[in-house]
Image (cartoon, rainbow, N blue to C red; front, side, top):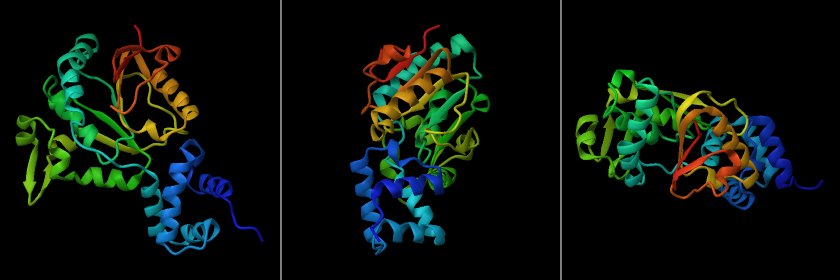
Amino acid sequence: MAAMDYETFEAQVLKMTGIDLVAYKEKQMKRRIDTLIRKHNSTGYEDFLNKLKTDKSLFDEFINYLTINVSEFYRNPEQWALMDKEFIPELTAKYGKNLKVWSAACSTGDEPYSLVMALSRHIPINQIRINATDLDKQVIAQAKVGLYAAKSVVSVPSDLKNKYFKQIGGSYQISDEIKSRVDFKEHNLLKDKYPDRCHLIVCRNVLIYFTDEAKVEIYKKFYNSLVPGGVLFIGSTEQIVDHKSYGFVRRNSFYYQKPL
């Protein structure tokens, strides 16, 4: 009997988890999965798949392994400075202080918590509400704990760091006041329904891992999720080269706006 090939494995994973590996860059994803298969002494895709069905901790590790969790607070500080000076004041002037903000593919929470802190300079903290989503329930669980390595918080402005973090040994615990402003949920960018009427969507350094076809679908959906005048903030490793084809106006290398 022939050994299971990667395409069959992809189809089986989709059935089992709802995660469509076809949308990820094959070479990169296959390499990551092959490494995990070797780590668990599996003889191939079929053997590994059988182990996933019976071993819950391996299944959780596999899901965690598929997601790319490289995150830090205020990543690319100059872009956050622009949000503070330009985009938050503009959005609050236009829509008031009850902004609908979505942090998509939020990983371990660094980004949505950065958003709460950034918004807290303009909006009373009890009026801030961030919808934060990620595919991986393990990183969501980590985000809810809110404990971070020192290197994750290096770029946080010092006034916010002093106000909202408590140092515990070499780590930093974010305050409950910030945590309480974020609602975390599991969400698959490739298949789940997107929130609507968002004023600000933040999705950074994630789409580089998707195929061009998947990116097209995601950018279209982001555009449709925004209110007219709403803003999409993307990562420093990404640019929407053909932003006009989606309807976006490019405000900056990393900020794109849906026209009024």
